[in-house]
Length: 311
Image (cartoon, rainbow, N blue to C red):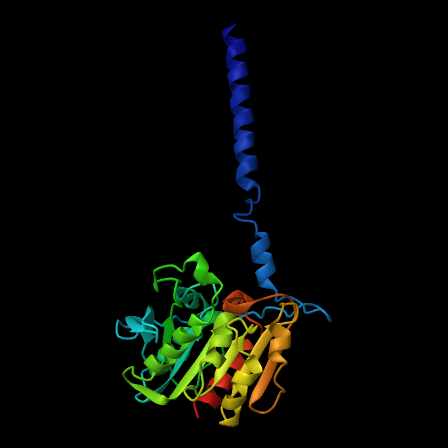
């Protein structure tokens, strides 16, 4: 019996030794398996004829860290009917700089502009760092010329964001007071420090697209409208004509399946001063400013407009 147990023990040890030798000599298993995401991003997407406008690929770039004096400074001002509005002023690094007034869409708020990265792009504080190039919105916005910098004013239309109180139901159907807000923002922008009061530029989405043109009058140096629709009860073409007559540029941008926006843009004949940008789909208003949804040429068109309006 003892001899039998000894044989079984020796046999078991032999088997264990064999297994240890096999596992130590076998090739190692892979430490990781590429995920579907990694495979997709490793190769640039192929563009097919007739397909939707593709989103371009961009290299990583440094991020600009703004000092306290460069970030938005909360400001308040009043419309002509006494309604107080809240805005944020983003200064330029250049003295006597042009200023851009951003006007949001209905039901949104000024803080939504933060997602687009166009504010730091227009301020162009990265130009102060000669050691490297900076890119914004993941590179979807083109390099701003080193000598160009804009101040920026954002604000909440009445009943939106910080411009409280909220609108009453009876006020929702009356969009005319938004014109008071836009006009007040233009006038207030002229008074801000370090700003050239003759170069106030409007960029707006949806009701802001109309307001940027409707409230311009003799004030603004140009307007960029994204998805206008005569939302504020003012005829877009009639509001645009005096601006163009002064030799100031207007740009109108829309998606072809977006309600009244196409016919509103085309209510003015294209010219050197008035240019129209049309895109597929149903995108509306501030959706065009979301980095991952920016059209390939959007940033370049916006830069060309800003340079034209600033001169």
